[in-house]
Amino acid sequence: MAFRIILLFFIIGLPLSAQAQLRAQDGLAALDAGDTKAARAIWTPLAERGDVLAQYNLAVLLATDAGDQADLEQAQHWFEAAAQQTHLGAQLALADMSAEQDDWQSAKYWYEAAAKAGAVRAQFALGKILERGLGTAPDPQQAIRWYQAAADQGHRAAQFALGAALAEQGQDDAAADWFEAAADQGHVEARHNLALALARGLGPQDGMVAALPREASKCQHEWCIRHRNGEGRRDV
Image 1 (cartoon, rainbow, N blue to C red):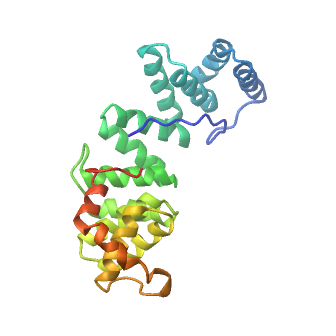
Image 2 (image 1 turned 60 degrees about the horizontal axis):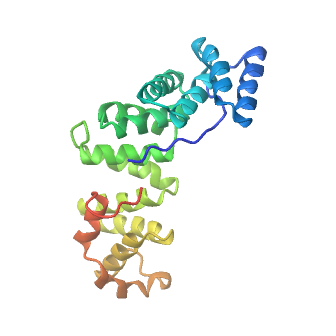
């Protein structure tokens, strides 16, 4: 799973004092000027005093400007400090780092925290962890719950994963509906699975998808399911 961090400057949690806000802005100004050393010097004491914004910004700085393993370990330390204060970006970053390290219990914990806060990428990732049994026993029903949460927010890969999971449980009409939703967003395997469902008389049979059955020959149902399970190209 790719380690993706976006440098975001926002706060979820405790308000900053006016002085801390000014110092935080000084750190941003230093970073804009290309002086990462000065930004680090400004944010470190703020982070040590519990400033969640400084903790997160310092963690991002350390992770993206890492000179050695010690910097990455410090980045993880500050992400965790901010995550404990319910900073959503920190929770996602910490989950990503844990997944890259194959620490699936930690990844599951932080993806779940972010998923409960409504983060669509975390909901999808948590669904994959639960379905595949990474660091935990497989839980197909909970996987479906989180795929559903992400799918309801329009996450294309989650819509496809949900359709495949429902198909495996014999809920073919519901599966076809989610394949259609993913196909409408350009998901190729979902389009193929929808075509196969239509050829079998399942799912929506309206004019919009009337031409799809000709695609069924390109994809067997089991082949597309394997893509969702990680045995082919993954859409994350």
